[in-house]
Image 1 (spheres, helix red, strand yellow):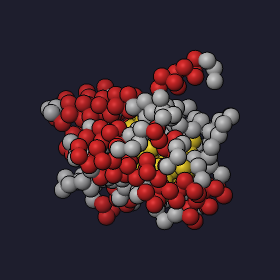
Image 2: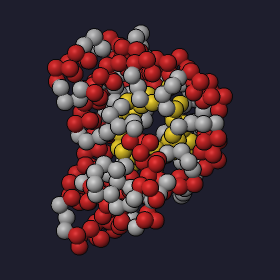
Image 3: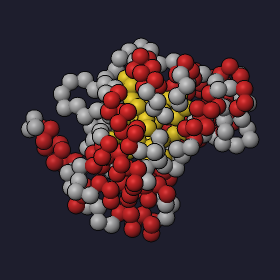
Image 4: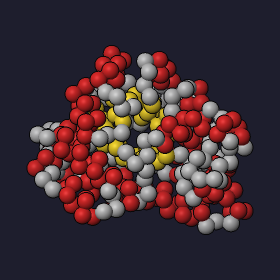
Length: 302
């Protein structure tokens, strides 16, 4: 079991000793982001706004209008890293271990093996145990999440839609599915865990550890369509440790106010009065995130 590379630091039921496994350090670093908001940014100006508004970290992407989305330019990442003091996440294509090597060499704090970029390898993910940086990986179901943890992911990003439309339905569906499976697993007899792990195509030892903990063995955030304080509170109340917010949050007249409201919603997600305060005055700032208008535009080929 000690070779599994997974450690539970949430309670006293850890299976692996944190002092004997370097992966535990990555898990601890990822846990430092719990209860926070990670904002995706394109430039230093957006990074500074995110930091000043209270984001716990920023994820750097390169704005791409045409063509495939790849790792951001290293010079852009270095410039943004110099401009802020919060942790910086670099994004690499799925399976592209060389992009991950480059990101680690320029000093990013975390690496996101992101399916929102182009896919580099359709069969294989990066062996994340070969890197010092903690990795974030996206998943849509429990089996996929635990397979990514086996590869060395220290944080799971429960992924919804990636178009930036503000539609949260896919994120909620995937999150509810994962949480439902966690509840089913927690109430299983021990002899049922073998067949369950086979059913979801996940390593048995990780499934057993997840059952013991009653939750995912690493930090779980969510991403996709999260645009309002109410969206954030919904995701948090459903069982996430934090949220990713896309760069569309800056497409308004006062992005600082919007980011500040999102951060406030994470901190007070169980307080309806505080959420009402966070939500005040944001309607005009989110006018472009109209699903009906988006559908119309897509239908007209715009």
